[in-house]
Image 1 (cartoon, helix red, strand yellow):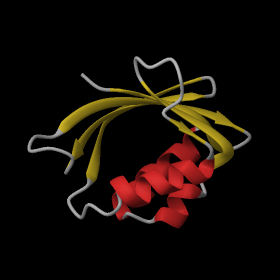
Image 2: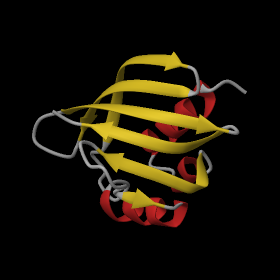
Image 3: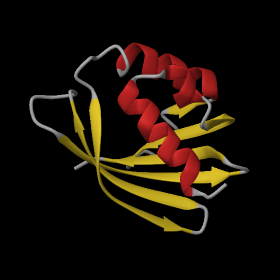
Image 4: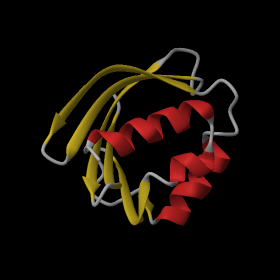
Length: 111
């Protein structure tokens, strides 16, 4: 399995609003950071599930478009346009750290 595999799988599950497939890509002790925050905004897989069920996958307009992807070591950098969160597409960069085939940490950057 490549470092990119769980990131691609979560991207596809995100666009399909498939919470089970999405969650299968993350480690139990997942940490998510909304930059420039120094503390995690999401800690643990169950917190991640709750956030996406209540704040993302309940939005039928939600869709991400991949602009570019770069892999460096065990990190995958996705430059995306996210539709459905505001009137205009929202540009973001997500950095995913993959450990033992699962996403263990993610850092999300917005303009």
